[in-house]
Amino acid sequence: MGSLVLGIWTQLIGGLTAFGFSLNSGRVLMFLLHLASTALVYGITLRATKRNLPAIIATLVFAFSPLVVALQRRVLLDNIMLVWLLLALFIILGENRTLKHYFMSAVCFGIAVQTKGAALGFLPAFVYIVTNHSSRIHRRFATGHWVALSLFIVSLYPLYAQMKEELFPQGWFLGGDFPHVSLLERLADRGPDTGRFLNIGAGFTESFQEWVNLGNATADPIIIYGGIVCAIFALLMAVDNRPLRPIVAMVLAFIFKLAISGPIFPSDIILGLPFLAACIGIVIGAVANAVGAVAGGSPVRYALATVVAAAMLYPFGIFYSQRTAPYTANQVEGQIEAVRWISENLPEDAVIVTDNYAFVELRRNFQNAHHYWKVDTDPAVKYAELGDDVCNIDYVLSTPQVVADVATYQLDLMRRAIEQSELLITYPNNGWPVEIRRTNKANCLASIVDSGADGANAG
Image 1 (cartoon, rainbow, N blue to C red):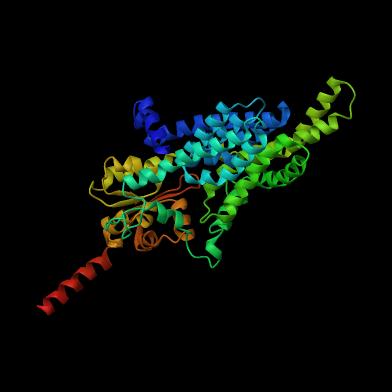
Image 2: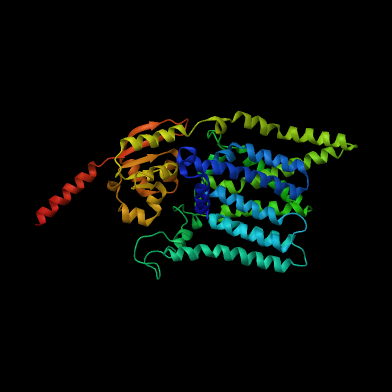
């Protein structure tokens, strides 16, 4: 579904090059989706608290967080999925919900899962919300039909996979005897072995450091730590405040999803950030309201509540004002220069393994360009095209993201390709260096010579 959204967007704007570099077209879409997500954060918090102040606070925290800005500018399925997920929640919150609202919510949730399967982790939270917040008159009908409709839409995903012969692994019944990706195999993949049960939490330490370590320009420990603390208070408040329970349920579902999922990527936090921001808005708004209630008249009360809220937001403002790199640093120029250098200097038949940002641009002129993740995870690429052999790779376009993923998720062929390569050129790119590397074919030539000698001796 995410690819369909990107395809429709490309048609609407007149092609991938409508904004220059092909990736810019996707980033414009991500900006629009960020605006939509921000508006939904405001709407969800407003419906949960029925007050503007918590909604405004949640919106400001979410909109200006350097971590949110850094992740939501990237062309990720997570960002497309988030809008559908928030929309599904927004529709069923509030008063006077009818069956039409629940049906619309189920459709949005199904599309969210179709966009990226990670949204399925929120299914228990949605079932709880629909069950406990629908009218008694149609509660069973609303819950049953919400679950049935959403699961029907989700079921189209494995059906489509089977139509493409990508549901079962190679060698299985109905799986075929040719290398291909498999949905069932992907769902069963728990990532590299960590020695823990089902490899739970693989990659969490590295991802968490990216979220909170101030050595990372886009880290935001304020929204992470502050959101966790406020989520605890929101949980306590929800005991007697029923409208807050949906947001608490979404936070708990997100935590549970991280706890039981396989590999955890830095981008996985995208699903939790709106609800952490909402919890911050709820708690700060509640404190401001409690302090303002001490005052007598309404003007004084609102003024005092505003002052208290501003004081509690002060640390956020100071922190965000000092972390301007995500808003001002140009980390695109080096990326574009690297692609331009490849286009001007490398032969069109070269086999290039690249970071995802350059894949679409390079693929237009280099038919043998491959996304680095597929080099190790797609059997059709790893074995059928590359033969699991570094000698079949000519160049590597590497970034810190590629290096980190290779180490964290044990991408073996990519690791060998980087280790057996020499650096041609580096673009500093404001702290996010882009490297163009050429694989060393000396060992490959030696292997060919040895094979030829063995054949001659045998003859």
